[in-house]
Image 1 (cartoon, rainbow over the protein chains, first blue to last red):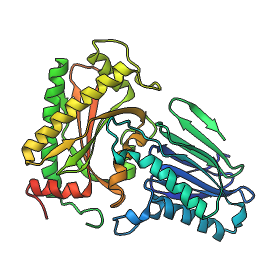
Image 2 (cartoon, chains in turn blue, purple):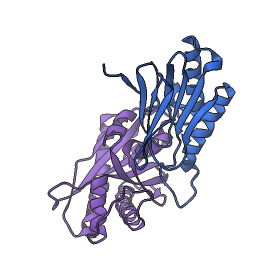
Image 3 (cartoon, chains in turn green, red):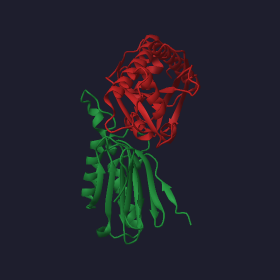
Image 4 (cartoon, rainbow over the protein chains, first blue to last red):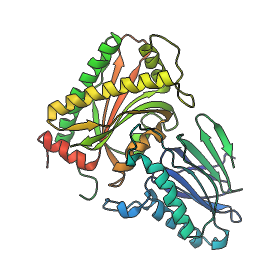
Length: 163
Length: 208
């Protein structure tokens, strides 16, 4: 049987149980956040673009787009599915600076700001980050397997790393 | 302003004309640079969802992009984007035929610099034509070049606009080298921030 791969788009959030996997492509300054319960072999992945939902100027806020609201939704959904708080773990990847500007423009710092915001939100929820591959200046594609909590990270120049 | 602005067909037409003028000047600049005939496509202007923007060239396909951030009357982002093979070929032409592979970490300095400067000149001619046409003050920041997964590159230009919604106004034009049997095509993507969209419409006389 072919295993099902659930695609997580940009500013999107999805959940999956084993044997399905969760995959998001082309993370640049965006951050992929995974929160999961390895015992229940169930988890969620968000592809966030911005650090803080209070900066939103949308009519209807897409909660999967912001670090704070996405972490909070991952958390409350997993609890609602019956995952106990103490077993929730997180992994994260992304937050690169794709373009190196000669002038130190503040907007260019969006990647690191996203990473900081995700860490802050996870710390507030007391969900430990078991692994992170963040920063640098390479795009990343990630795939998470709830079955064993493993995360595959693919970059153009370094190939595939599994953690 | 709250939310992403709604845009009429008439306004899209006006932007198509603006994109046309910009790309025509960029085509002329490239033609002068390489001494070859350069063609341009009819611009495509539309409101596109993020998936559509990032999927334009395949999410994980490798592209090279020269990025300029726009300040002044129309804040936003401009990309000059080519698939890796074509970026290598264009860079090789600019360097007088030397073999080039830009997909290395770090990017080879000569190649990166040549492509960066070409992108800067082409985007600059596009923008100055647009500025003359609209009377708007368009100030690009110094360019930056990168080579990576297309979606990772383009998402950079979407971060700012994403505060307003999950859409972007996309002004998409390509120029191609005529003499190449296999096409060598570079695409300009202009992504104005929502505040910049209003200024553009006002300058074009099609504000709501």
